[in-house]
Image 1: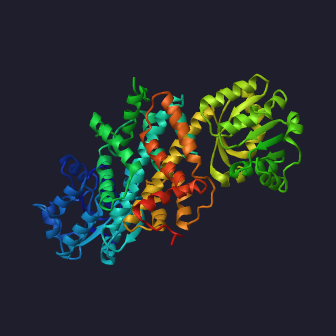
Image 2: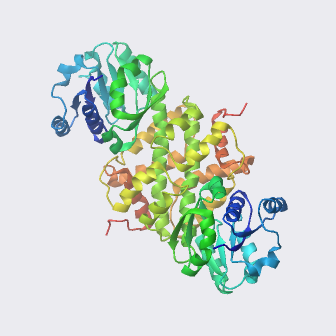
Image 3: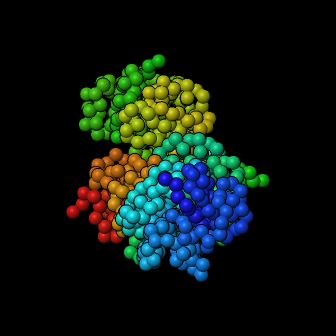
Length: 298
Length: 298
């Protein structure tokens, strides 16, 4: 079963997801605030059309924008799309937001008869392009049913983590807590090793086969070995996502000392002008403090 | 080629390693300060004999004691074994120690013609019992050659991380930094998830397949789900190992904010009487603070 779908937000994740939808045979519109990205998608299998004109014909929209404010604007802003959608169409939100925000969006959609799936993603740029993401989704049975064809095009694994919006975003916050801490710990350990004469290359070869390994270490540490900080997922993602974790934690007086320590390192990286680099560039904060020369540096 | 070997320290790791040596056909003596452990090993394939009497006939000793002080005592204490060993025999030290300590032991061995391999291990109790450990070893070519038969009985992967003692211990410190942080982060994330309605079971099922996973999460979080804190690797290991990391870091003015945050949680667990429980019991610190009821608790 193919659907008529629009992807809003064609960043590194959204673009790969939209391409996966095209490959699966869905009629796929793609839009981004950056017109170059929209044009690139059109030239690579996207269907031409104005969002306002096609809105009422869509079965689903998939939003993959940067944050809650952008999601709010896309859905319910001045040119918000939800009021233009038909009853029974579904909003699939892949944006990392607080559970309360996801619940609020779902309620607002419901008031116009539009379904909402709280559907954060995990897996990185490569899996997005392959249609092999993990999706941690929550919502009503109706929302899952309406979104199923497009989810199948995007994901290798779809976790149903609850019957209402909010649970998906909570699971994503848990995942981001770990992923962020693991990137910071990888950077801390890699540079600590360098102070003891262990090369970044040797670090990756050995630790990736020992109990100290993590998904993030195996994915990101090779960027440091290659000295290549071309952004796949930027440093600036992490102050945003870890602050979501800390806000949720604060609301229940939950203490997150390890997460807080990791956040400080991402903030230091962001404040040092590394915000748009690949998140593995957090290692530069450690290296500068310790006077270490990383691969690719002079 | 089979060797005559003695294992000193028959804790959860040492016992499994000694059994792997027996299985590989080596003549294997085993000793522990706890006579019950020594007797258990004798009843399960160990060779009978007093350490002092067999010392000069040994090809290798493998030490797997708790810390540097015990290693020092075993090797060079009042009844230290090294002065009794023949020239060209090898000490394989699997103890987690500071690189400086490993270098000092190697030098002291060298002065009596005994070889020393700085050979910390990774992989946990199960892999120790299977003979499938990872060993991050450093030492002279002679030390590697003398230790090779026994290393092959213990390990699936032997990393040669340097030509002198110290490098192996440095790599182990790097691994422990990550492993300790990952256990603490797992506990923090699991309980954070519980505050948002995510069960520990659901946490493991989803996150182990997402970018937030780690070796430690997949190994330890199931203990929490099962409510089983039977010690495989105790809480008390971590204040010791992470302090080794911090001491090394301090010696080069290297800052380890994420590691320090994790250490505080292990110290809190140890001070709360959880020191002898499985290291996954660090989760109880988070759960108590937040008033959460873990699986298996009333």
